[in-house]
Image 1 (cartoon, helix red, strand yellow):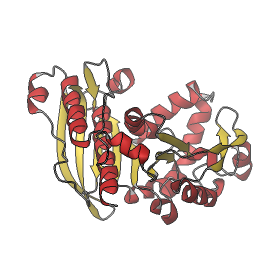
Image 2 (tube, helix red, strand yellow):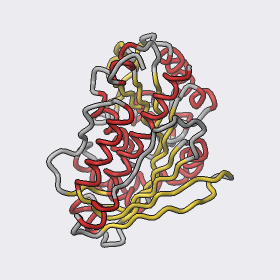
Image 3 (cartoon, rainbow, N blue to C red):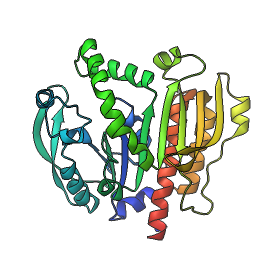
Length: 320
């Protein structure tokens, strides 16, 4: 590498690395890319929310009798064109959708940074979108978890009534199964989320869930880049319930590995993983989970995804 710190290499590179995250509304998509934002910072990371590419506002969708999950309610062709330009470092005039009003705000100029994150319903919907993404993730919480999250978010943050949210959930589900769920087969990694085996109340009270990270086998591997768990920290320094399990599975006709994480782990486990990633990639400092004695299964999955994404970016820089 030309620079001691790989962050400097990314900053100096003309390449725009694109990370696509797909999933239903309220599924926690932004949570699992927060680590990348924390590590690389606002100077290198920019994000587009695909809700901005709705073609109809809330009233328009109601008049048409369609949901935001229907491709007809979105300007996917414009998104494809904009992503093509952004991938090449060319600014665009981006639309803006306001969830509070349900209407569109004035568009604005959007300049891509070295890492561009796209989050939305249709991120992996077309071959053109998928072709312009360097890494892709699908977030897939169990329905009971997703519905609880959506109710809390839309009532507390977006001003909907509980009755309106429940009606929308029922209305959207057929479109989710038809248009959104099939995108899982195109993702490099799939995050599944369900209530913890140690009690569903842990999710609402402490954000503790059972998380399943399904990943395709790496097509490229860089020598001496690995990720190791410290069994001593796992077995000797934890005082709360946790479990780790790895199984192989078939998803959409191809083999994937599933890491199933549940409960809470000692901060020592994550700190050693962070130091390992720093040492091997020269990306530093990595300190996502500060001032915490325990981290959740979701936190660990987020860190593993960061390692996988950094690994992909290093490979591209090394061999392109």
